Image (cartoon, rainbow, N blue to C red; front, top):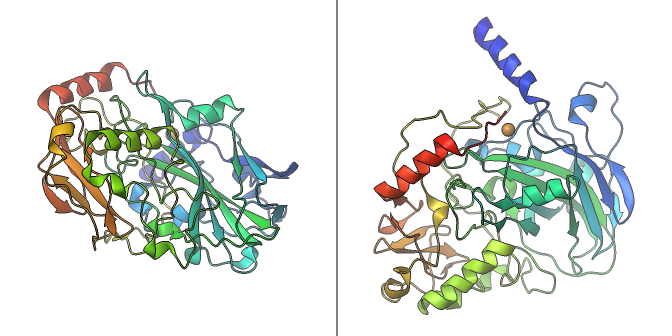
Length: 420
Ligand SMILES: [Cu+2]
């Protein structure tokens, strides 16, 4: 690498350092623990023992969707297990407080747990299987780009409090907490993941063993909650990752394969049920979801990122005026409220078993379904003014109409905040 390029990267890193944040303290059932202060501890020869995992992300940077199949996505770049664990009772609370968070980095805040099946301090992170215990997404879209869980986190003094499921079995767990910034996510691979991990020792006499998903299988760059244009009004935002685990559900490691998504039965009934399931997704990912999706077989593209250690360029905003491919007004503008969907989803809807987990089915350009837990989920209409490319494929492609794209283009120029 040339000297000048090295210098410019160093400058970029320095400029960034103030921008983002990390989890700087954690309250577990009332006891406060220090976070891994990456901008301090990384440079110390003898950093303190913590419940928080270390990372090498001294740039306060993120993990790009191009590294979703890389171990960097598990607990951030260069992460290593924490030595300590915080005891917590089932039903207990964990409050994660970030050092700071930029208010223009809107997006969901998601928390998972994974059983270490032994001491977490020497666990192989690539074996951890995560189940989602908390998720906040789009809270209100009254004003583009919307009010997001990240905004709520800022409001709550840069913190979010999550509850440990009341029924999980005792043992050592990694808690994986993450903000996903979507301010550039209208471009493929424009989302930014900021994962953080801590160790917990769950006490009690629970018996549930939720099935989980490997960190490297949590997301795909084309997920509708990852590749999404928040600079257009969204009727629905689908929080990425496997389904929320709720205590008392029957989704255990042994039964997950035979359970089905709670929304599957809505598949043939058209608009009314479709929109209600979409609403459930907008608020939280909670109510209707009772199963844990096992996605360990998700296809991943054959990328060859070396280690994810290199910080990607920081495209906080795409270059102004650049013409975008027709698919970029995209995927997550999916909505069930389009007037056309009510009449078209009644025919051609797939139901029952499917074999290609995670694949999408576009029905006649106007509605789509996904293969979830081995079954086709409910049909949803595409947003007004858009259409999907018919057929079954790994990627759902939704093209915007000419008119819609012009509106989006204007927003890109005039409404975007100037981001650092
Ligand atoms: Cu940023």
